[in-house]
Length: 135
Image (cartoon, rainbow, N blue to C red; front, side, top):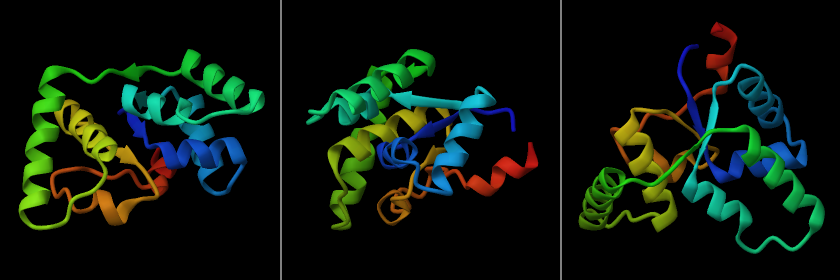
């Protein structure tokens, strides 16, 4: 695997909690320098955090992973996704739409457990942890 994979918030929380098999998949992606976060995911991770242990986990992770910011073009693409989903009555959360916009603009796959929502975006590639075995 030669690409970068964007991690959604849910799989990072699983990583912090040690929930398998996601935790091992995230660990392997980190070791292979194949994992990145979006600035939206960083926001979601920090929002509402109270405990010092979790705050340190987030800070440590953010310090070693690339963070893809939300650029103007990402926001444009996300707005198109929003409008398309709204038109068919299948909206998902705004943060998820922004994450999808970043992934789409940079042609990066998204690693998420929330495939029910993200699969509504037909052009978005979802990462399958089974892809790790082909490294």
